[in-house]
Image 1 (cartoon, protein in one colour):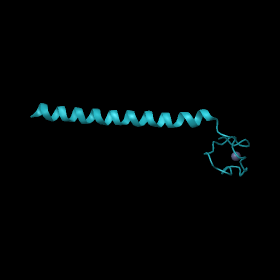
Image 2 (cartoon, helix red, strand yellow):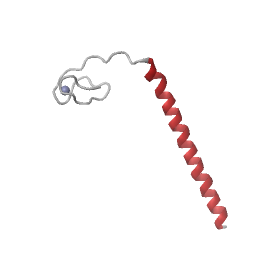
Image 3 (tube, protein in one colour):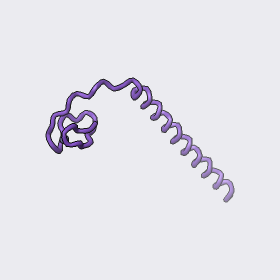
Image 4 (tube, helix red, strand yellow):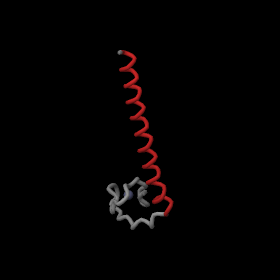
Length: 68
Ligand SMILES: [Zn+2]
């Protein structure tokens, strides 16, 4: 969200611009796209994180076996 008066980028849910003090209007209803996309992105990121962690564990185990 951007302040219409001074153009400062504001976090969602901020009711007043900290720079110029303009009261922010209630944001328009969030388009359903965002509601649907965000959990998907979150899940994807989580899955990738799990895969990376698993890869590191597997690599670590391989190294242990190689050194033995
Ligand atoms: Zn402002």
